[in-house]
Structures are given as structure tokens and as C-alpha cells.
Image 1 (cartoon, rainbow, N blue to C red):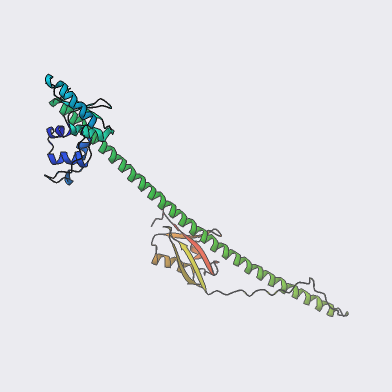
Image 2: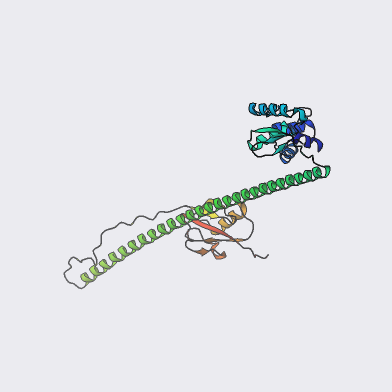
Length: 323
């Protein structure tokens, strides 16, 4: 029995069978049912697909078949099937031979008197059941593969997002360290300049005292050598800053910047954060140098706290604050 006949006996329509065999290139029952169930909405009722050319016997085979027919004409022998000369499989008709050739690339067939035993109703139902089970199992495997692929893509997206966030946080931390280091270096240079100026003033005072003591003793006043000849260095005038640029990292990881007056009290910074970004209790800390600001610092100016001309602070939420 050919594949088309088996499908017809299972209840499929002719246009569905033609679509599965000619368009879907189904070579067996499983492929045909899979094609029909998958493309059922695309099959137009009553439409038939273009048929593939049917295999025919070669000239030599035809001659052989003719000779055989002539030799056996008296014996009244009739060909009941086709046989694949390459693998020996029996095929009911030319359609079955064509499907076999497409599946195996075999091309040599001959007529055979052996009859193919048709499937019983029980065998046909059993075959249909097994094919349906295979189709369900294959679709389940495909669904599981699609779900796994979707999970892997989501994991990759989360991992990439986490990596980008870590890179952003690292960049912000490096920027805050650079600002803190620049502030520390500027403060150190200012302190050194003040120290050099003080030392020079003290040396001048000491030289004047020694000169006055020599004049008072009545001795000949000569040139009083300086205690230590120093290279005249003019300290750079200390710059006066009127503004304070603060960079504040909030508890959610974002960074904000704002400019205050150098004379503003620290409590003004607290109020500005409450009004614009945060309402829950928090404290501000400084990483470089390490310091946590408390209530006693609220009444000090930003200059007194060493935050002028610029500073970097971090917000620390009070998780266990009680009202």
C-alpha cells in the first residue's frame, strides 16, 4: 500500500495528502503527518500541488520486463509490485518507488510478482498511534530547547547588565579617588607654603634680635650674619575660594553634583539632599581621608571642614533608625 493510500485510509483529505507528498517531500508516514499537522492552515481546500515526475523502468528494464512478459504470458503471471534492485525492498506502485528513490537515492527498480501484504486495521491504528507519539515527543523536545535558549539569553542579558553596572561604579569610584587625591595634594601644598613663610618670618625676627643685642652691648656693630642663609623663596599667595563644588554619591549608587558657598554651613548640604533627593535618615561620610560627619559638624562651614574648593562625599542610610 502506498503512502498516499495509507494516509487516505487514516482519514486525511486528498489535498492534504498531495501537499505532504509533493510539497513537503514526505518519504514516510511520520513525515507526512508532521507536515500536515504543521502546515494545515496553509493548505487550500481542493488545491493540489504540482506532482513530481514518477519513476519509470529504464529501457533495459523495460526490455527485460517485455521479454519476461512474453515468456510468461502463457502462464498468466501478473506483476503485483515493484522491487528495488539495490536494497531489495518491495514497493506497491510507482508512487511508492518515487518516494523510496527520494529518500534513499536508489534508481534501479524492476517489476515483481510478489504481493505486499496490506496492513490490518489494528496494525494501521498502532502505526498511527506510534507516529502521533513521536510527533508529540518531538514537539516537546523542541519546546524544551526553545525554553532553555530563552533562559540562557535572559541569563546573558542579566550578566551583561551587571558587568556594565560594575564598570560604571568602578569608574565613579576612581573619579572620586582622583578628586580626593587632588584635594589632599592642594591642601598639603598650602600647608607647606604657610610653613615656609612662618620659618622665614622667624629667621628675620631672630636676626633682628641678635643685631639689637649687639648694639646695646656697645660693641662695634658689624654685619650680623644671618643664622642660615636661605634662598629667597616667595611663597605663592594662598588662593581664596568663594565656592565649594561637592560630588555626592547617593544610596542608590547614582552621583549628583552641586555648588555651595564656601561659607555655607554643613547643615545646608543636608537640607539640600533632603529637599531634592532623599527623605530617609542618613549620614554623610568621606572616604579620603576617612571621616563620618556628625551633628557637631552641621554648624561648621564647608571651609572649616576642609571641603573647599571641592570635595567628595558618600551617603550612608540609617537602616535601623527609630522615630
